[in-house]
Image (cartoon, rainbow, N blue to C red; front, side, top):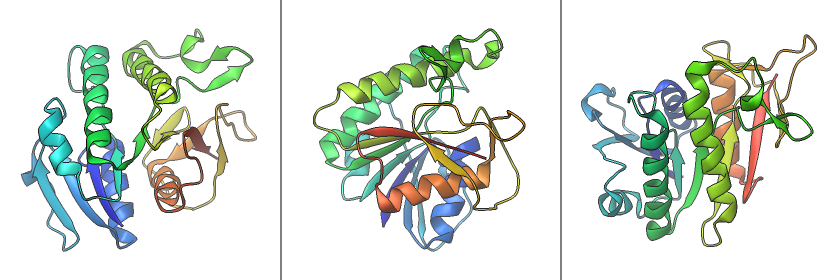
Length: 211
C-alpha cells in the first residue's frame, strides 16, 4: 500500500511510520523538516505545508491512503491552527481522490449518555484546545458526503510502551480496563490504526482502541 503520512515526525506519527514500514508499506512522509527522518528504502520524506491545499493535494495524489497525524500542539493558537489545517487536509484529500484515515483525540468519546470526556471536570486543561479541535473535526467528517474517511481515537492515556497486539476496539464510547483506566501504548495504537488502514472496517465512522 502507498501511504501518505502527514505528521510523520510527531508523537503518534512516529509510531505510525514505524508500524507502516515494518509491515512493508511504501510511505511518503509529509513533514515540515524532512531531513530529521532517518533514511529507509520504503520511505520518501517531503517538506509539506498543510495550509497550502493545492500543493498538498498534488503530494497526496496517487497514494492509496492519506494517514493524518496532524496536530496543532506546536503553536500558541492550537485550536485555530488545527481546524484550519484539518480543513485544508480534507479539501486536499478530496481533490486527490484518496481515502482519509485521521487521528482524533479521546476527548470526544462518551463516558456517559450525552457526556463526552472533554466536558468532564477532570479533563486536563492543557489538552482542551486540541481535543476540541478533534471533536469539531469529527463533526466535519460526519457532514462530508464526498470523502471516504475514518477517524481513530486513542485511549485517554497513550504513552510509549510494549507492543503487545492485545487490545479492545470500540467506537464512540471510552474504553476502560478492569481497573477503570483508559490506556494504550503508542505501539499498540499504531497496530490498531494500521490494521484499519489495511482492512477498512470502519468506513465513514470513528473507532477507538484501548486495553
